Length: 373
Ligand SMILES: *Cc1c(COP(=O)(O)O)cnc(C)c1O
Image (cartoon, rainbow, N blue to C red; front, side, top):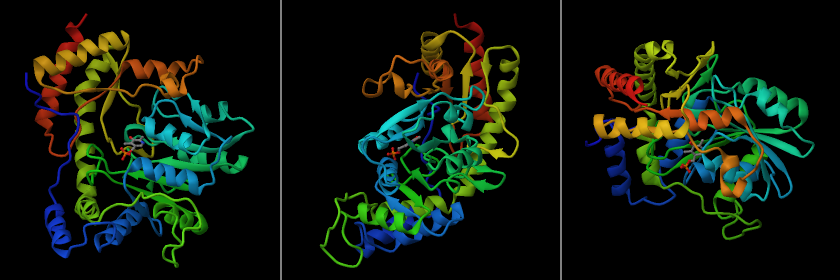
């Protein structure tokens, strides 16, 4: 059966087209042009911070953030094992070593408690992730880092718009990064952004983004830099998208509420577990997700396959834990992470998915879960 419901898709229903045509007509299609500062300003306003930098993608934003925080070979950084590979890779790009934390089984995030458990004397920083849009206890992690003299970097690729007691994720750390890949809450095709709190470190990040060139002296490159810039065309799409951020977030929260309502009975039957909602924490519900209570990845694969072939519903498995990938492999066991990684699934979550669509998806999930063996 043809896929009717994808896990995610970009919805360009604002001024994106108009702005892109304007950017093309202006001739400014590369990494200068009026949409770049406008988009950067809009991101900063969303975070309620003074300034943000756009980047070519979320991974380059993470790399710049790590470099601007002074990460160097031999250092150790704590990062959740259950994340997208880019979080760990950014640490490795700097020659440093990622130390993997287990996660909280209820919110699926590496919390302050999980992080404190793996702290070593070589830990220089923490790279916290708000998985699938659910905020981690970033206020407590910030406190932990402050008390131990380490920096905090927030990977908010999945959590743009998520808040803790009204304060946006991405405004707690010494730096934070965002992704605007095609499946993220808002997209620029490929794109990313970063916030660096300290003005000196921010200057450094800006220089690194632009080939290490002195900001006041053309073709003087005192440091080894990169070309990690965003294009004006991408920023034009981004501005159109971010103008509609509240709408896209409201859509995701409506969809999540509908999933909660429809899937509660399956949770009561013990067939799956839904994300735990923490008081004061507002998820962006980048992808609505649930965790099977047993069976492991073979059963999950059968369920996913049945949903796709019989009902046209695409789902996604949770990420493979970092400590199970060849370049970061370790025998050590992180049991909660391993359980989630083999039992968790992401469901279709995108602007325009109607309540009736979610009802239909949940009906299919219920049928498959009750009959699969
Ligand atoms: C998507 C994502 C990234 C990387 O973003 P790209 O724009 O694809 O480079 C980094 N971290 C997490 C947690 C992500 O989900």
